Amino acid sequence: MNRQEVLTILDQYGLSAKKSLGQNFLCNDNVIGGILDLANLDKTMTCLEIGPGLGALSEKAVILCGRYVAVEIDTRFQERLTDAVENKGGCVLYKDYLALAAEDLPDPSFAPDVILSNLPYYVMTPIMLKVMRDFPSCGKMVFMVEEEALDRIFANPGTKQYGPLSVVTALFGNKRKCFNVDAASFCPAPNTISSVIEITAEPGRVFDPSWIGFVESAFALRRKTLVNSLSSSGKYSKESILSALGTLGIKETVRSEELQPSDFVRMYEIMHDRKEEN
Image (cartoon, rainbow, N blue to C red; front, side, top):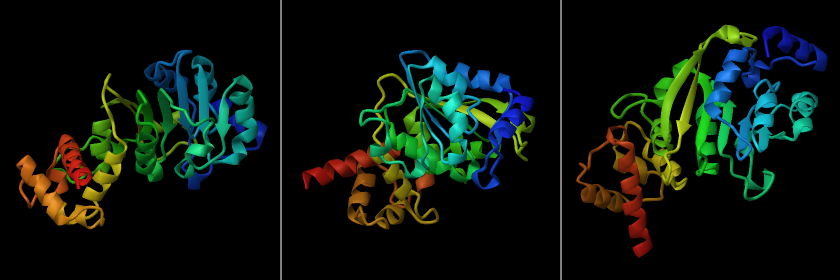
């Protein structure tokens, strides 16, 4: 889908971009092809797309996979997505993904193999954490994000940007930046450069969605020690946190940003094993 095609579709369906929703429509077939190459869809796969918009990616993805479901917050796109997606066998749910509940999905066993999304900056973190919480068995996620957001996703321990997003994505799978997308690839053109990233789960890996809340609690009070931050959630006593740190040989004054992603898992397992014993 090129720029002229996007403008024609907007005119045909009486649509326009909503700045409040961070809408910029992809209009570069090379970028669309690059994302689909990363997704590597086939007829055995289920694909979930969050925020299909005009369906530039969707209309191609829906014919490549065995099952396609999209979640779109903007009901203005319903006629266009009916033509581009639903008439080709796909399903579109008109919901805010952040408010989506399990019962809203096509069936209770819905489990995507691949998740695709062009994520506006203002909802990037909550959506990424929610998809990992909702679909822990997903094999691959391909996201387009603002380039400046990469620091938060790929941050290392001990840095200012290191936080729940960098920790949880590292626990979920192998992550890498794939390529940049310039502003001219969108209509209207944003004021930023975008980047396409992928997160791929390793075969046989286990991801526990409960880790997400634990990590978020650990970073709740960034200027405080891990002990104070975790205990402030009301879920864990200082005694249990200190005991777990002692078992792991980690100093009592440690801050969350000093820990490796694997340290959070080890702490979680120790503390929850002890809860079960009690």
